Image 1 (cartoon, helix red, strand yellow):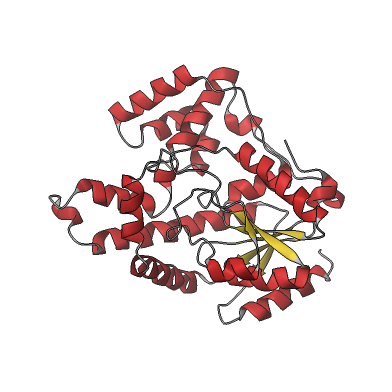
Image 2 (image 1 turned 90 degrees about the horizontal axis):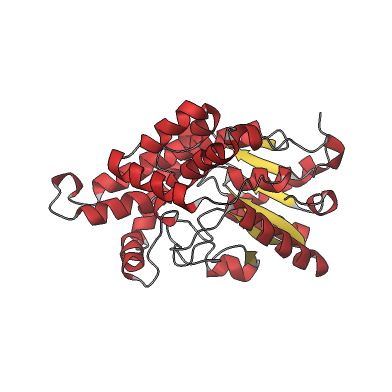
Length: 323
């Protein structure tokens, strides 16, 4: 499944690591491009997970319509292929109204799927999945990742050891096809003449981004992140397997479920610092994704630019021939 060349060439893409400032920049780009924004975030699809995913607030959504957010309940599952299908339908609708689709976010897997298509793989083998889940529960964290490293080290290298859903899917593909998922999933770039020219990613200084991440995590808690997670856990649709792996939510859920009797988790400071550390590590992995997608044009920033200035730079890049 993939975008047609004609559809892809009418879309714009703005990517970058978490907390780099994509959301405000996107508002300015949208105004210049007569665009509406499509979320490129695998966790913003979940309803009720607002603070921890930094969803656009009411002001931002009033300025520019946003799409592909709040698609499913936190206990549902959603594949990359489903995202791609939803994105195609949304792009068709926007273009029919004369609007430009502007994808904005930091999920590298989604970006690659949009640019290159997605390998859907064989149908699910639910018995095999259940067996793996039960074994993972017995053997503990890291067991699935170690199993995948033995048969498909390429896939293991790009998946987080806690990403149970994707680890199981990779093991399932190898089990059903006899080939590593990484071999079957080698989506290759389109020929240069068929690609969209409008794929940009923001590359900031590491220290500057680390400070931005720390301040964002502090702000999340000031806005009521702990209460949001507690409310979700008590709701009719508490976070399921995928939603529980969302950055920030995973750490806070573990902290809440550990309870006050666990001395290691007394007070919010330890879990706050844990989220900051994991987010900085995640940002490095995001940059690796974008750097390895040859369709992406790097936009190096120093952190002093205003959103208006960055908007102008990107629009000027669009009129500058690539090498």
